[in-house]
Length: 551
Image (cartoon, rainbow, N blue to C red; front, side, top):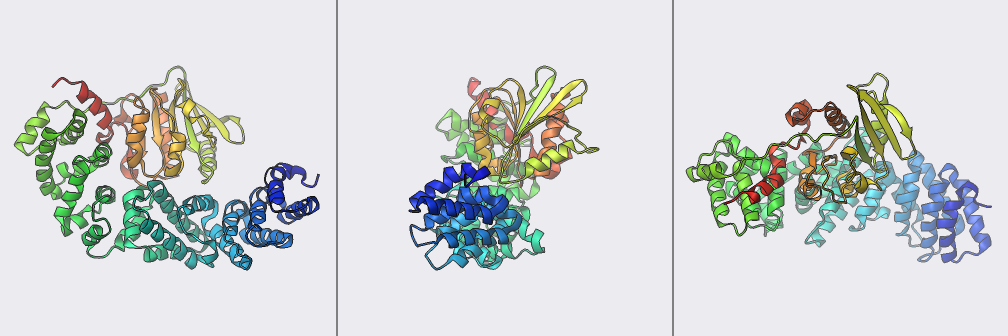
């Protein structure tokens, strides 16, 4: 009766927290009423998250009902249209730091973080599980940057085997802070301060493990802040070379290899050699280094590397312990189109050719694609608006719509092209196993990719991994879906590019196109989109062919 339309959140979250905090029935009803009055349209978030967090804080230090309602009210006033994010994520996390005397610091920290992180407060809290991030140290954007950098530094100092998943979240947070600060006052103070305050070790790991999640400009700032003796520092922070290969691969993707090559050619070769020499990550490194080897073979500035690795690959192929290992070396050898070393050339000529890959076809008169979005971004709304804009380039019509899903259709040469947009990923595994959907697209951050691609299937599909960090996940996705063909972005994935690429590919499939080279346009070249027939996509298919070929 007291909660009205907010009864669900009151009964599910606020009431249990109130009882646990020791409030009697009258006090419970009173604080729920006052919270609703103070929160207005944000009462769902206040009752569901902020109030329970405040009530839990009373177990550590007494927080009166009046204080509880007051901090919720102040948080809403300071957060404006991002009040939901503040109430559901930032304030509950900040209240964990309550000591009985720091309410003002809690509100200031929660609202400042929300101001600059907005919808990504949940991402910060998820990453903060592994950090020592303290909301009460945040007073303004400068201290926010310093606190985040301090936390990231601490994480890399205290973890011998850091998580790539966590690194991706750090990268996304840095990009988000940059975007939001720029939209507020057109400055770049936060990112500049994070770069300045981060240790070399933290920056090294961010590039080695989360480079594809970083904006080009963020990468440039981090890499440009390295000391002059880059190789010396790399050897100091990673003496066993555990991440050398990853680092080399990532700076190669950013066209900055020459700086290390000119400083210490031996280190460069050592790092690549380490990645392909009996490594537990041999398959992954083979795929990740494919583009690097293509450069070795084709670019004059890498003539020394070409000469060295032609000889080295012959050695590794002949001494491999298994056919599986041999397959990796054979694949790297076949990437060359102009062998120089005589022994390398002879081996190259005896190995099977790289496979040809054709575009999968949809059956029937309806070709269906489905794109999975996540609520920590607003690309669902942006894509829906673009696809249905009158006079726009896409010209879809809405045929069905719910709170989470929109079904779009248009006619293409007598066939129906159907595109489903959704923020509900609960059926992703089923869709990847059905006979109707030819195109499945992940439209979220890299750390959400596994939520879209968590199952297994032998169906023929086209999969677009639209998150950043595609090169690092392509092998895993290909193993999960061996008959699917994967499209990914080797750079920082952009929503506008992904929405166009998904549309273009589904349209070409609907038109019956079978050749990936006829699907390719300037988008792939200019934006770093990698299609299934690119050389660095062919390893697993080539390995299967090689293992079937008699010696």
